[in-house]
Image 1 (cartoon, rainbow, N blue to C red):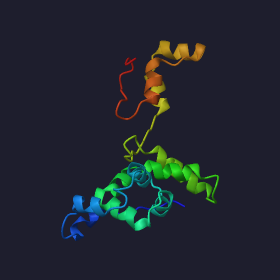
Image 2 (image 1 turned 135 degrees about the horizontal axis):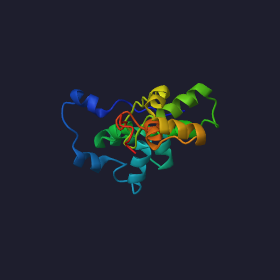
Image 3 (image 1 turned 135 degrees about the vertical axis):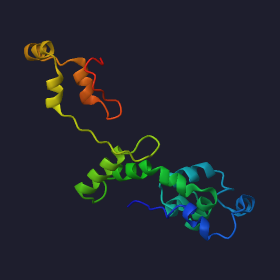
Image 4 (image 1 turned 180 degrees about the vertical axis):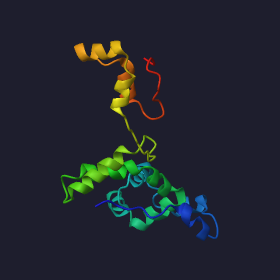
Length: 171
């Protein structure tokens, strides 16, 4: 079961009358004073459940985790780290009852995230007929005899839309 983080405190900012005093927060916060604070924060950002974090680190309850996360803006860090949540789903696919469709959807979603956790739509369309039409007679003959494709052909097939080229002599 994946833990869902509530919406970022950025959306709650308009509801707050005054900003959080980090000095006051740190004096009263059991997480700030905890000797394993960095681990607690890392677990939260990596989508561990606040209840489980509280239990593992000997904190009174999950509300301390939520208060600390709100004060330090950890919700937005967790949201940027959606890869961690997807990794947990994928890793546990064999341990819990999930549908094949759910696992495939998680893997597909994971594959669309870049290293910064940003969603990237990858759209690739390659018309092989057009590529063969671009081949010179000598290139066609080489392909027919040896099965060797020209270097520009291989690059065009593997190119992303941003770096593809119409120049057949790009290689």
